[in-house]
Each structure stands twice: as structure tokens, then as C-alpha cells.
Length: 102
Image 1 (cartoon, one colour):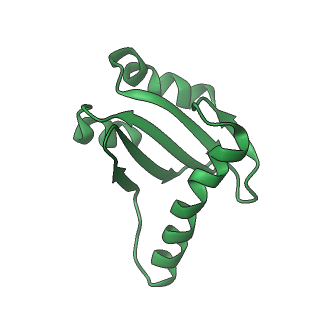
Image 2 (cartoon, rainbow, N blue to C red; image 1 turned 90 degrees about the vertical axis):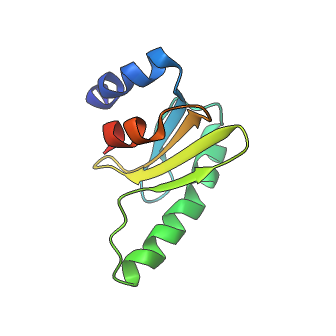
């Protein structure tokens, strides 16, 4: 987890990253720096897990899923640690952030 936090530090410093959480397959929170409670961090991640699993069963490779909301951008990705959901500022440089997260 320390390596992940170190890699994300530049995003926090620019204000692009507002928070993130990492959950395991069973929904247990491994790490939560989001503004959501542990329970809701998993509930927010679960739809991404479901969609990704469906795409994988359909023989699609999924690198990450990105959802742009009116005020935030959510990026879901799978890490060795588990399922990660990143909350980003709407005005972030999405290409740079996506590259750093991959």
C-alpha cells in the first residue's frame, strides 16, 4: 500500500485525486482514503466489479472503467491488492491521470 500511496502523491499534490479506496473480492476494505464510509466504498465499487466481470466473461480485456459525473470522475481498476476506485477532480488531466494509474 505504501508504494501505491507514493505513486499517487503527485495527484494529491495537484488536487487531481480527491480520494480512493481498495477492496478485496469479498468487499472487505483494504484501504480507504475516500470520503465514503467503508460500507459505501464497497457499495460504490461493486457495480464496477460486476460490469468488469461481465466484460471479461465476454472475452473482453478491461484495463479500467471511467465514469465522468457532473463534479467528479471515477476510475475503477483492478490492482494486485484488489479492486480500486479513484475519485478525481472533474478538471483533472484525465489522460495523464490514467497513465499514472496504469
